[in-house]
Length: 180
Image 1 (spheres, rainbow, N blue to C red):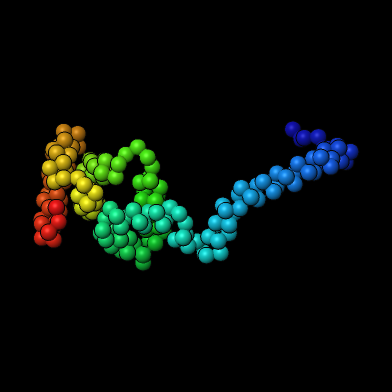
Image 2 (tube, rainbow, N blue to C red):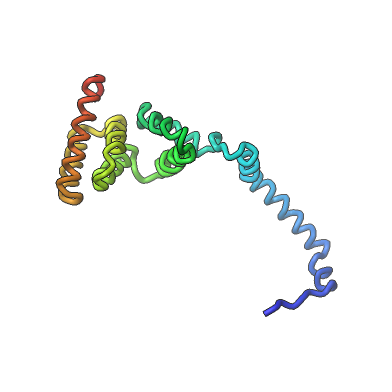
């Protein structure tokens, strides 16, 4: 069904001096309120998609260094040549956005992450990185062992056995480096 066309009189009546002033005021308001976002989009477009200066990226890089002490950066460096966008997503979303949310401490987040990776049963390289991270943010070795034992019930003994082997390697690496 076609909409009826407006006559010129209706358009003229719609844009009164008062209406025009309201439109100008709204435009000024939007420019002031939205200017930072528009500026960010224009800057990003001008940089050919380099978003390394956005807030989530900067926060994510700091959080990653705090948690992983270099291990996570080595993973990201390994992605630079083949999938740089994936590396950026890893920094921006989990580390730059999710880890910033209230409700869980960093230690609790790492315990949940370790639990999820154990449950997957096929993410030993990621589990190794996150076990180091969990220990870096205050988890104890005993807490990690208890998480693995708990996961034997829900993820199965094969997943728990794989996880305890990774934990054993992580503990040995940390002992060799003099870390707790």
